[in-house]
Length: 194
Length: 181
Image 1 (cartoon, rainbow over the protein chains, first blue to last red):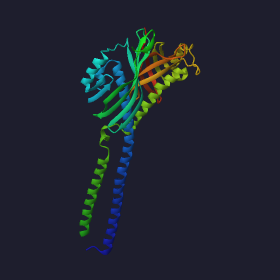
Image 2: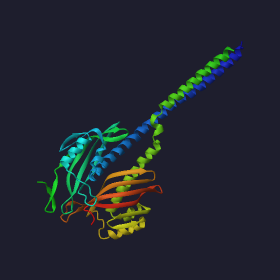
Image 3: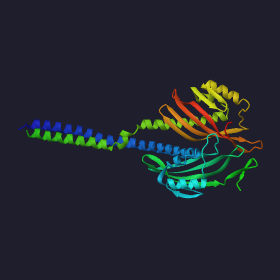
Image 4: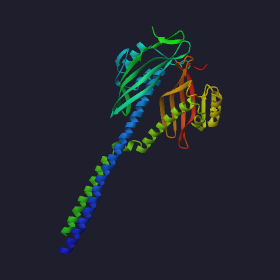
């Protein structure tokens, strides 16, 4: 049988060890999640900036691909069930959109030595909400007149919904709306089309 | 004897609790932490993009205000500019070409003749190097004081980090409308 003193000593040691362990454990419990929560809040902020950056890139990429006549490439920026709407109508899915563009926008092959038109993409207002985002932006189409002059042809805005699909932002829907009627070129000046 | 058994149990319990705490802590870490670049690296990339956007806009501003000293400082030591005015290399070369080319069109804030819109930035950063595509559109004033777009094209850039600052290693100014003959 252990003596009373040794029991006391032993229980003292036990209390001390327990206290030390408790401090260590609570430290781990409190510190771990706190650090995780702190870095995940920072990570969420970084993620939002990255998302905005990727969506800004997407907006410019759409313009660049359309300008270079790569409509198939443009539609790779869209989800499979995405919708494109404009004055010419609404189509769902890349194939239907492509068909609608071919019908209404005609076939416009790109020749770097003979650029017919290009889009300026500006005024992007991007709102990210998790795996979904919306954006409003402006487009201005510049064109080349028959006598080789640059003029502003038509302008409008985009009303977009994006989703994150497989880690990549894509257009879920794009409304391409015309705000100012197109101009044609006549007698050396841009005038309203007849 | 009884005490030894108790201590033994106590240690088993302590080891089990510690193991549990550690595994819970590990589980609480973001699951994606392992396969994603570090936060520091991600912030650096965003930071680089912001600095490159600034460079692209500052270029246009320096050009429009004919501040060719600042303009030439945006080029790397071996940086080249190519376009309708020819090709120049290094800040001194770029400065000389621009001073010569724009000597008859000084900047007057009360009588601005032209300016550049710089838009549609497609920036790809890869470490200390970046490639950028963007558009430029020059607007001018007609003799009867109207604003009119005059020239447009795109820039094809390679940008590098030199002494901690992003600079043009090569900027090619391509004319699209009207094209160069």
